[in-house]
Image (cartoon, rainbow, N blue to C red; front, side, top):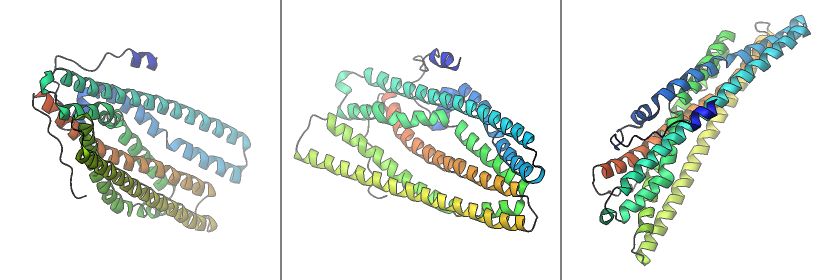
Length: 340
């Protein structure tokens, strides 16, 4: 059913409307996919509401084995667990496929816009700048923008909803252990924005460099000076990519370290409270499992905000070029920043 709906969807581009793009990427999301975003939100809410059910079932299974030793109830709880994860996983699979389709639909829309605008220009007005930038946009620049359109609303809602659900459950289990775990999130609110800003600046510069390279490849001028400049651009792009990798994976390392310290705090506090009979062992098991479930959505949220910043950078460059073409103006090259 879903495959039929997605396959039969008409093309998103209406040739009668303006080919110019809105100023902000979220306006483009609304313009190109608002009703699909509503459907994605509805399914996403169901997914994150089911997130805490397996945690509670784990706690009950452990406690029933330790206290009551009623194995028939354990079988029923495990069956409920299996049913829950099947339903949740099935809905999540549909959401991911639907997101991918919405994103690819946006990529198609942007490519049609670029191709239509370039094709509508008189041949004598299409210089090497327009050809080079047009190729860069058609081949590479539209991909991350379209991918963001597919996940722009449902992704932060899903990961934020999972975080809220799991945190509420953790506080339900034990407020002091929950506070200890939350305190270990505080350093991430400091180093994540700083490191993300550094990644964004390098991304903007890299896109500008690749555009200049595309223009030089299309340009009829081929000499030693051009080749030397292109080699410098390629080396600069390499350095920027390596800088992005270093910052990105250093940030992931620090985030994982914070997560492991959360587990250690749960073992220390939870173990003491089990030892003093203040807390049942099933609560500690569920708590550690819940902390593990906090790491993935938090990391995905960080990735989302990295993607939204990267997508906005690329969208600004993309919409600027498309709107220049729509206004009949010659494309202007983007200056490469000297400092990061």
